[in-house]
Amino acid sequence: MPYTNEEGGLLNNFAREPKIYQAEPPTQGQKRTYILLAITATVLVGGLVSVAFFVSQSS
Image (cartoon, rainbow, N blue to C red):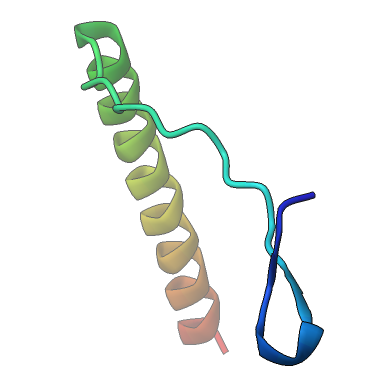
């Protein structure tokens, strides 16, 4: 484990740093998947809000 000596003999331990890499942009297939997931999530949330609204109005 890497450490440094400070004044007075104190040791200071540091966490090991991960390897840094450049992120790659999403491919066309990944973009299509993200769009389908977004549409599915929007429909699901819209449906839940609609059900909650109609249930609250039926009382």
